[in-house]
Amino acid sequence: MREAISLPPAELTDRDAIKDAVQQLRARMRRASDPDPIHLEFLEDDLREGQRTLEGVQNFFDEVVSLLGSPGVRATDLIDLADDPAVLDQVDYLVVVLGNLRRRLMQLATRSAR
Image (cartoon, rainbow, N blue to C red; front, side):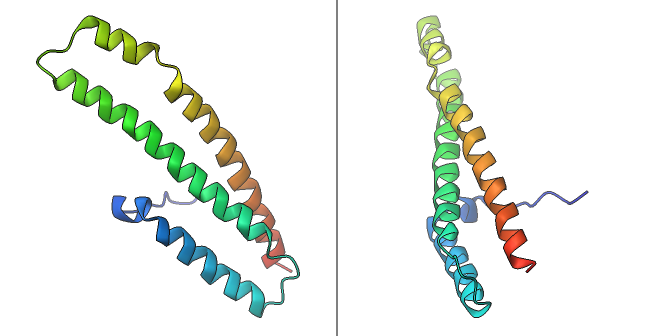
């Protein structure tokens, strides 16, 4: 079983890190004469979409913490936050993006093994 990869938060939110990583991969693939590097565009999109969606989920948690720490928090505020389906929609979308990303990584691994 592989170990979990732990990235500092600054790297996780650095959008240029995604671009740099994909450009480096693209350069390696050009040297390897990969005939179809277009799938890297989709990989980059999945990484950006996943990151954006994670930020939305993180914002929900930040809002919960902020609300709970507020001295004037009312029951209706908690109910409104709990009833908002947006975070669940984001989590559902994140599952889709993760599925796409995992599939693209497998495709990349298969191409790299040739």
